[in-house]
Image 1 (cartoon, rainbow, N blue to C red):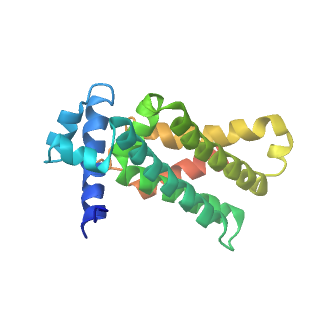
Image 2: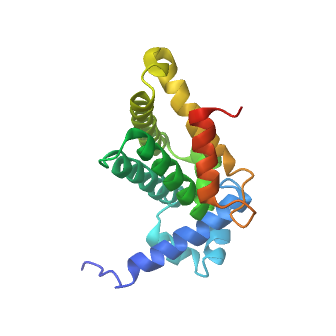
Length: 195
């Protein structure tokens, strides 16, 4: 007989993802046990296994959901009928807002991806490569002259992502600078320079 899912299955799964992400971001994937994760989620290990057959499956769900949302946001913004510079600013703001809202997931993506099985790691890397290539095309639209040297296209895109990604190793949303203001500063410094 086929097992029927509860009406609130997805809601419960989302709560598990959020609470597990908080614990993994704090302790690290390699240190957090399934018992730790179950306790953080206010449930039993068997209940946790009902949603995620392994700790790696839980990790994959956390990072996949996060990076998929970021990739979808970039694709949506790039498709807008706006000048390239406006899409650039909108994407940076969207990325920074998303990373600030999902700080735990962002930290896990940076620190714990290495614990995924190779096939799952490659799926995440594929999304990262797609986002980098999309950013390269956007930067080419913004400044074709600077992007003439094809060798530098990927490094420029990665420099921008590096500015945004590593911000969350020190940035606190509760601090004096909002994610929106920080996004504006990143876009301005990247597009216009500091001096």
